[in-house]
Image 1 (tube, rainbow, N blue to C red):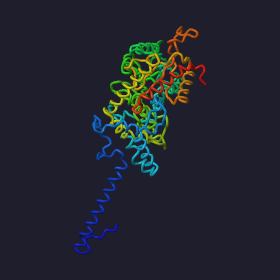
Image 2 (cartoon, helix red, strand yellow):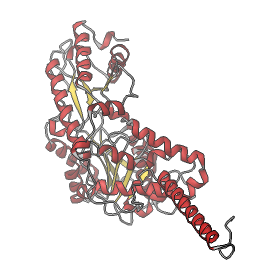
Image 3 (spheres, rainbow, N blue to C red):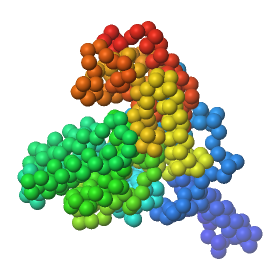
Image 4 (tube, rainbow, N blue to C red):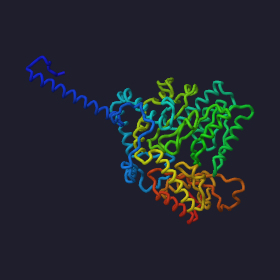
Length: 488
């Protein structure tokens, strides 16, 4: 230090030294505070990252986000595209992309400091916020993983070990819905069936008219799983099925599992958070996963896996083994080697973004649900068809029947039509093929026989024009006599 000892010099000189020292202290303190604020994008005077209020603050009416601000947040979307497929990959606002970039730069600027002093605290803060959002009892019940596929691997790996180690008997069953994600089906194949477990697939009706239809079929599946003295070791239930898209009465199905002695229940809710209300204690499953990049505005890819506290939870491990193995799933998941963790760190920024909307995340859910039902009914009237489920069974997506004259008769036809809409009409929407029952089609009699459905999504950036563009594209194909047989 270049400070002079106070004992030297005249009183005037000593006062000058003291003042100089105080100025340096204040300057140093100011720099430190500024550095701390830069290190914490959420800094607002409260640096206690572990304390999250039960009721998260919402914006005041005067500061709600405007339509023009919404357009600015999603101005990076490709111009001219009617993007009514938020369900597949989600959407990330510009302000969140900027926040993510800041986290990425902080790592690249000083990786060691970032790793040792900031990464784990940042992930803990995100986990704490998620804990509050889903009404979990404790932050230790929440792990952050890449996506729902990773979460399914974690749970099914655990079940596979139980079969391989003899804790479950060969032939004991896993029950799942037929419309489960393909990745889940492959994980069952990789971890469960090769270890000796059997799989019961519950065929759900579609179009569907009530929860009771789903509940009845699910009970049949559990009965099959328990036949011949077997035990149902795991039930996998979608909260929102993807294709076709339907909200499943998940709380009722979990309760039935408890009554029927199912050992573990895993709810695959890839589409849920940000699209429907999520209360993990109310649902009552052992495991619950939802992506944060589909309907909660996070960048790809980030999801949470909730594991209810129990002896089972202690034996769950991330499939990527790092030096954190054995320290609990949440800690294992928070470090799986050098990679970009920024999407897991922007959860606080995303919460700030959704709270710019009236009603916060609940307001966005209602806004999207009401809009997608309204647009679905508009399209169904235009095409003379129907929705695939009642409005109350639609999340922020809806299945809309396509004109029978398009003759969608296979999954390949559905893909051809989807590609044609993208390439020739600049409309991005998934198309679903639903096989008709025997006898519903005879020869060329396609009149009124709906076998194809468009799965439309609604997110805050969508406008009525997006759906009118889809309506007009389909009407043009019908007018021109186009069928899937003559699509390239």
